Length: 133
Image 1 (cartoon, rainbow, N blue to C red):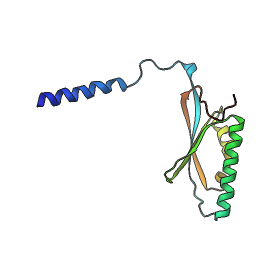
Image 2 (tube, helix red, strand yellow; image 1 turned 180 degrees about the vertical axis):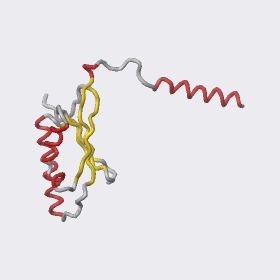
Image 3 (cartoon, rainbow, N blue to C red; image 1 turned 135 degrees about the horizontal axis):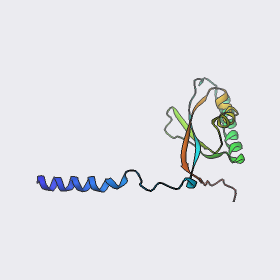
Image 4 (cartoon, rainbow, N blue to C red; image 1 turned 120 degrees about the vertical axis):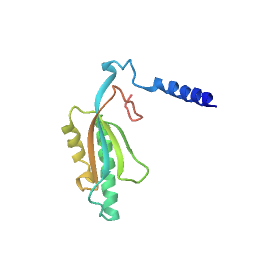
């Protein structure tokens, strides 16, 4: 029985060894730097229902504006109602550009949302259903 347990454990260990670091990373031209934005609950959550609706409409308008400019590649909310509210993946040159776009979001300006910005190295092309053909 001990031998069978050893063989099964060895099988699982060897099976997962292939999931380590890729020895052939993608070519640099296949990768690029993006900016990953984590939207979080802000400090100011006392707005009344009408104000929350107005801020959400402005937030969505800013998302559409950034998508139309081609700087927003991915956007979406988290569905678990936690402190993390959503994400953006943005295609800009600098973190300062990210901040300039985020400043135009009424929900961020009002303190209802806050954010963290992280440079992210990912695939050179991210296609979305709102891409213009």
